[in-house]
Length: 405
Image 1 (cartoon, one colour):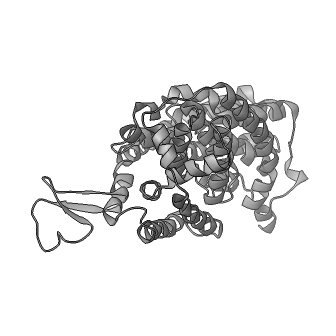
Image 2 (spheres, rainbow, N blue to C red):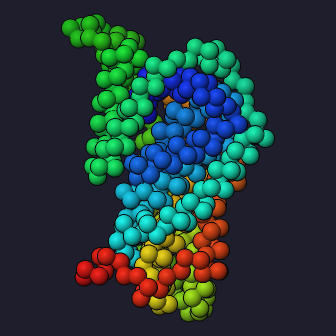
Image 3 (tube, rainbow, N blue to C red):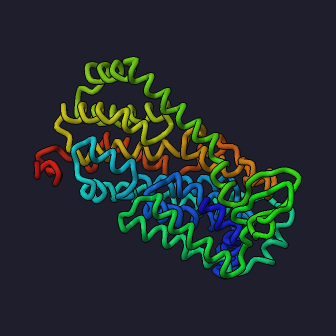
């Protein structure tokens, strides 16, 4: 709802104006989107929310100035991976810390080195790929770029309010609500959109209320506007998410995960190195099946703790292995939740495809190789397990929550 309201308020046109003014061309736009999406996701603590916002707003702006759609979508997903993995208020960060008996602050501080080591080559890869992967020509793109103006950039303040409120510790729903109220106010105050663009009630007969700015007379009664479109477009994805989580619970209750854990403990995790490799690959496997990263993390967390404790591996290290893989792979596989929320923005009833054409719809399968930060993050932990980079044992450092207990 927030992203749709910013869109009808001309934020996309404002971004196009800013890109031209700052000379951010098609080649560098994916790299810029990766950095900015990473910052937003880190600030608000939700990679899914950052993906929705950036696909709704930054994605069409980038494609309209000539960026490759597949690479740009992948860059946004990479930014979501970065924020989901590193944000102190991210649900995956909290789950990984709590389930491994570690304090959140210590976990974030200990995983920063892994996130940066993966982010630097990912940024370079987007710069290189952006210069060799061509974009698409959209009908009317030139006219839209020429008519773009800076007024829509006022919504940078709307997004800033969301980030500041979330970082201040308020719930993400509250943070988004404040941002939404400010966005609606800016739209009406500066004439960026009409009240009916935000919410409109269609009635079949004129009456006492038909003179209101949010009431229209039409052939069929109904509700519309950015608030309605933003909400109703995600109902199918909500149902899909519930079904995926239900499937995971059936697997857990059926004893499948327990059997896997027993096999890994008895036959595979026989040394510290093999134990960490087992945690990395086991977490990746479970995430591939469940695809909703927090649900996958909750499912595999007890087994990561048990394997790690058997070999005296520190809680910070276990939490980092757990979170990096669930955050990364949650935005890579075509059926992963992070990918689906972005794809839904493209194909929904009022999605980008309906507004701009089929060129704005990206096949999720094509995105897989280009989510560079996600792949680099997984590779770093595979190498860390093999080489021992960053490995800590329980006596090396005791987390604050454990020491207080």
